[in-house]
Each structure stands twice: as structure tokens, then as C-alpha cells.
Image (cartoon, rainbow, N blue to C red):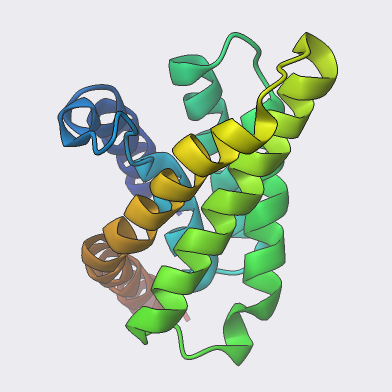
Amino acid sequence: MKYRILAAVLFVLSAAVLQSTVMGYLEVFSVKPNIIITLAVTIALLRGTWESGIMGIVLGLAMDILMGKTIGWYALLLFLLSILISLVNDKLYRDRFFVQMGFGFISTVLVETLFLTIIFMFRGYENIPYLFTTVVLPEAAMNGILILPLFKPVSKVYNILDMVDRKRNRIAS
């Protein structure tokens, strides 16, 4: 259990550091990819509802702290997204890159569109269609591509953690 918590902390910290430093240099059309959403989708594709939901909340809080002026909106959105994806992940061929890219793209569109809707309701932004075409869609395309190199290492880490858990449970019995 302590290895899982350590891995989760390392995932969140590395995603936050990468998002706040390296991803700033990967701008395309003045839009940065979002590694935090991509990591939340990857974990939701690999793990069950509890683990992916908790990671969704923690990653969402990290994203709120890094990017937003309000705390809690991204945490709520990533929590709900992680739960929805983890409910259907057993029925998918999650090793297929079209599935990974599709979930990365659709999840980013959903999260960012809902966030823009929340901002529109509370702050009154007027150009939602413009923001959707110039920010949300390019970011979703970049996240769909970014999920491909991220999926395999995260999957390997979780396979190692599962193997350690099985070994410990076998020795404990």
C-alpha cells in the first residue's frame, strides 16, 4: 500500500512539475498540452473506480493550484471523468492507440468545455465558440497525441506495483 501511495505522489508531483515547466515550451498555436488531464485519463483507463477517482481529485487539485484562480472545479471535473472512464475500462482494448487517443481527445474536450461553461456562468466570458475552436480543440488534439508516450510507462509502473502486491500477499498467507 505504501508503494502505491509513493507512486501516486510521484505521478502527481512529476505531472505538476512538467506542466508548469516543460509544457510551456511545447506550445502550438499558443496552446499548451495538458499532461495532468492526460495522466488522469491514463490512470482511469488502467485502474478501478476508487483509485482512479482519488487520483482524479488529487490531479484536479494540482491543476487548480497551478492554473486556476478557484480551487475545486478541475478537481470535480477530473474526479467525475475518472469515475466515468474507469466504469467502462474493463470493456475496452485499452492497449490500442486509437482507444487511448480517442479517450485523451474526448476527455479534454469534455473537461475544458465544462470548465469554460462554468467560467461563462460565473464570470461572463462572451466568446465561447472562439475559445472552443482556438483553445479547446488544439489542446485536445495535443493531449490525444501526448497520451501515447505516457500510457506505456504508467502501465508498467502499475504492473510492477500489482506484482509487488501479489508477492506480498502470497508471502503473508
